[in-house]
Image (cartoon, rainbow, N blue to C red; front, side):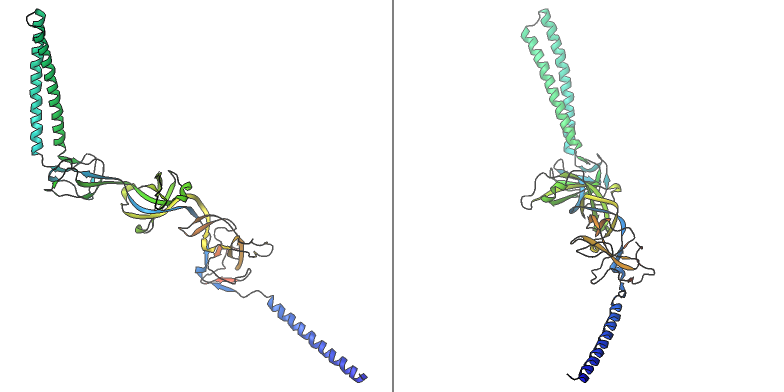
Length: 390
């Protein structure tokens, strides 16, 4: 190469070097723009929720129909015609209160006859007593034979036996006469009336149905795998959808000792007090046998809990793979925070956070992808920065 050519090569190389230095500088400026704060994101109000204190419950799910614990079918005590009916459906009655009256002419005549027979037999006993006393005295004087005295004593015992039989028959006749007035076997409410005045009713036929709604009972079938969680006295929380979500409480009163061979389920019986008898039988209830409860717990929506490996900010270490964490809005920015979980309340859709979050913290509940820690965030409609600044 000539010296001229060598000089030209040096100039070209220098020019290339200057050009390369200029690209690196620009590249550095571009890299500086990448280090700027990420663009802010806006969340809807439905995408966030506040951690709050609540009472949470978990346990064995149950459902069934509430029915009166006491249900009595009042049957006819005899086959006879009804003369009067004193109560209607919905009437409250006390124990022993008359409900209806049957025709009683025949039974009244039988009772009168039985009473007269008692009177006759009492007179016969009086005569037999006098005769036996006279026979004993005469025998002592030697006026009559021993056989005559013995016959008089036997006649007295026979008279007394006939009197005893007559008294028993009179009592039976009076009892049958009293049964013509049908009375309430217990206090309660008439839920059904099967007859009308003038009907002839067979012995044992249902006349009324009487219920006591001061305590209602729910019968529920539970899979046998829940058996270790069940015991008599355990509290039960129930919701009545037919009454705008009214919540009532009860306790397990009985557990069937035998599982259904077809379903492998066992029946439990839950007593639900009904003060003021505001509830009625036939309402459908669903809820759970409470096995765990947290009163005043810090609660967040269950859908806010996420799982997996995720950084938790500078110096925060990092969430272990699969560990639960929450995405929060704190000081106007997104942050990830590990959380320890406690009682999960499926009915309310809430879960207890035993650590990692405090009441008033704003948690993200929406399935929002691509949120990075430190990203500025605004909540649509919010007039002040979100989060409590923790």
